[in-house]
Length: 447
View 1 (cartoon, rainbow, N blue to C red):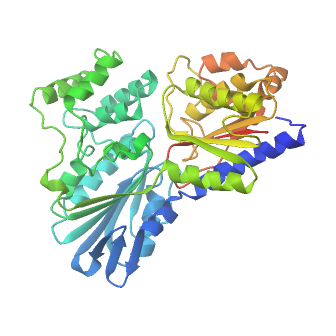
View 2: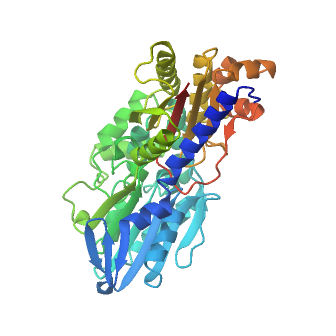
View 3: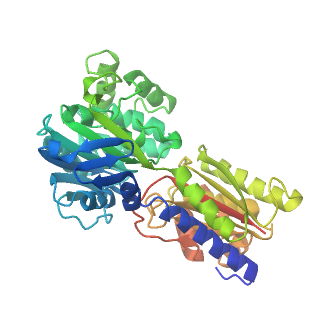
């Protein structure tokens, strides 16, 4: 898009720099190194200290878009002590590793690579005994990247379930409840496989509220959800007759006690388990705030817990921006509103996009004609849905530029086709793999 206003060009540039400052604060390798320190034979992880010499073997496993970068940092801390390891990453999210094997797999819909590697992780940790240490790297994307179906469920069945859940508007909490109760590795089952070895998990949170049993579907923590709750989610979205028969049968067997529930608090598998969050959305938001203040903006953090329908969230952000222009409330100009979290898109069309791109398009429609507003919405992992973009940046003139290019913004929005819209306008935010994943970051600037 061509921008003739020097002020607007500056605002758009500022929004990008504020966004990148947020990303830098939660990079996986930096987060691991900030939480793991080696002092002689002591491995300090947060408030816990482990005697490295006490362990006969040290294994590193994990899954998530940032798990390879996390493993790379662990290799720096333990350059000679790692015996073996496997981490699962999204395609093209690899890192240079010396001791830990890495497998690229499908996300957000799982694939055969993920299933095979998840099985390899289970087989590896089952070798561990009480004299061994297992370090587990978990980040956003771990749920899709660990598709080890429960017995009698095929990978194709899990893939179909994933597509249905992504399309129906289910929240990440709801999606992961179903994933945990159709899996042989999620919902604390990885911890069961590790026991009696010592297990330490380093976790980058990509879920609202940093719920440990939801991040990557909680493979190393007690599960608080149940088969009955999983069935309630199926009923809520009318998926009962649409799900594959093997999944329906498995959920029914779980409700009737014929399949064991996921391990709960008090299970011995968690007696020797430490779970530590090393990066979260609020950390990225605070770093973005610091950068915005350096650039002269009055700042207001709206929330790191924004969820719900994407279009409604976009209208809410646009309404606050317009209020700032009209009344100077809740903060004066130049103003910077920052929010995080993860919204939901209910698919009605067959276009290409993601929640950040859809947020930006809905926001562009909302602020059209209101001068000196710029809005950026981006995923901290660098990819929005099935696209290579993190998100997009818009301003009050985006719709005029679209009209000049022969693009009907409302039509693109109704077809959930935000990626081609912004691709044609040149307003995509392309970061490439970011080595982190702590949900989304939204920047609203008002002059």
